[in-house]
Length: 255
Image 1 (tube, rainbow, N blue to C red):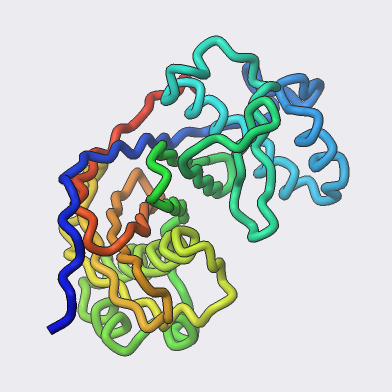
Image 2 (image 1 turned 180 degrees about the vertical axis):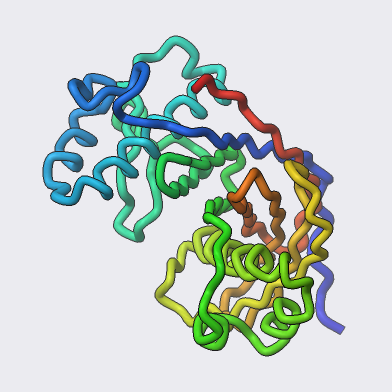
């Protein structure tokens, strides 16, 4: 019999998150000035050619900085330009404060003028948040990205549920791959998603993941909820054998 893993004390982990509408042409966020961006962020923005990409990137940075300022007491009162959200070489957002990486994990997702962001200060946990517009997909999309059991689950739903089920599965896979820091570099069918579909608006419901990926020592869990015609999913990649409970705190941000 193999050696049992050491006992770990139960810990409660807070995940702070937000979901909001942002427009670079309204309120404090303006296309006429970006003094709230750090010098490194302004350099990154300057090389972005496509308006849609620029707008989404700006909206995401603005929302994420607002979340961090409200979620982290030590940042209270800091100018936004002193928070620099940069791109790690592996593709995920890296928060820098005074030239040093901020502990914890930040994830950002945007769809049009809506943005979702999530942050945890816990150093051993990686998170991924994803935001999608609920829409119908071609049957070929399901064949390309979903497992057989997932396709059955979509097709056995009520006709008015199938678009939401499809979007839920796709979003949950995106969130999981962010939490694993893999992106879409792997076959999404290597991660299978299972969930009840109670369609409770604005209430988190659990996601269960199984994976054929050769990632050792990790465990994926997640949640989802629907806001209007948007699907939000949150995945957490945590060490095996750790005894955690999670509290998801929505941080209200003014429009």
